[in-house]
Length: 163
Image 1 (cartoon, rainbow, N blue to C red):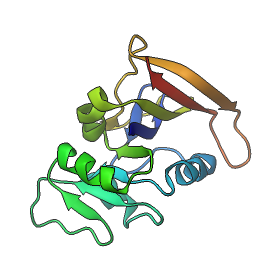
Image 2 (spheres, helix red, strand yellow; image 1 turned 45 degrees about the horizontal axis):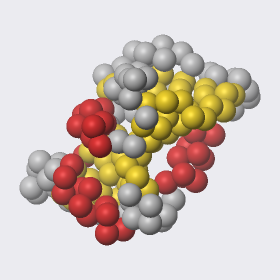
Image 3 (cartoon, rainbow, N blue to C red; image 1 turned 180 degrees about the horizontal axis):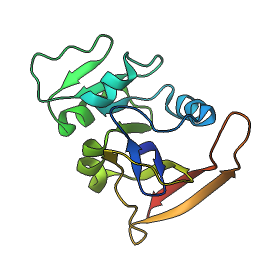
């Protein structure tokens, strides 16, 4: 079973501000959908709230300490451990952790692969992705894209595998 992170993060590791992405990258959204489709996704409550709904063709698992929290179309669990246990029942190989910052930090020791869309700019934010430790992870794929009419900033689809 592979535990994978999937995230878009700026050069200064910002992943969000005020509950939203600070950029608009349609190709990143398409990549996210293609990569996670058919796999369980684990996220924190704030990330689920930002999405506004469960994502189709995936088992959505939301972690929150709020016992009364309801997430229509998603499973609600109290811990990362409970989320991973549940996700294993739905996985055919990969389990994706989609954020936010606190969940990424908690799950980092368990992560085998990181799918990072590196947004080529520095942003102001309040949610951050952990710094990738190159003594623990190796860049195994990079697919760089220049800005275009739909993407105001350059970005690089990267895959980092645990060494």
